[in-house]
Amino acid sequence: MLPDFNLALPLLGTFLIGLSKASLASGLGMLTTPLLATAMPARLAIGVVLPLLCFADGITILAYWKKWDWSRVWPPLLGVTPGIALGMLFVKQISDRSLQLSIGITALVLTLLLLIRQLWFPQHVYHPKWWHGALVGALAGFSSTISHGAGPILAIYLAAQGLPKQ
Image (cartoon, rainbow, N blue to C red; front, side, top):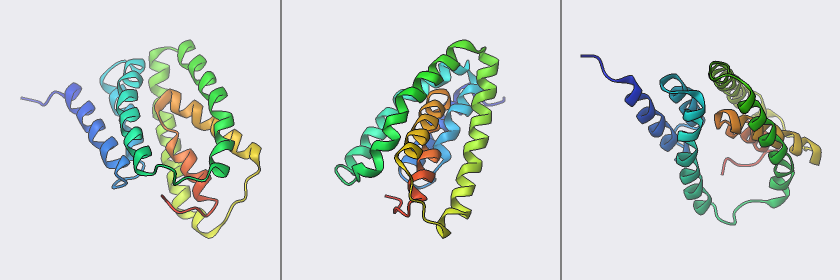
């Protein structure tokens, strides 16, 4: 008897979120939405993953409470809301099949960004202007809305500034 992949994929996705948030497999959590989108309608997959990520992010925020530098955080926050709004319009307007394809393409692009971060940024230090941060925030908001994939975008933005992983 073959395993039920409709149950196995969400369980694998949940496991990947846990590994990613524990910093044991950074970036793997972004595979959760694409995995679920293969087992259920894409909009439902986005909705199922959201509470899991919110819970995991809440725990992460507690672990790093008041250990962040607001001068590095506020510029991306300026762009997040417009990015989320554009993402919501995008998700509302396209078919479920197109949304599945968009989730998959986003996962591939974000994986490429993770590779770029590992290969290129350790040798360079980036000093962004405020609008660079707002643009990064907009991209992160859009990406997060369609596939919960803002992490690699923000990680590259922050790592490029020579900040430690924490």
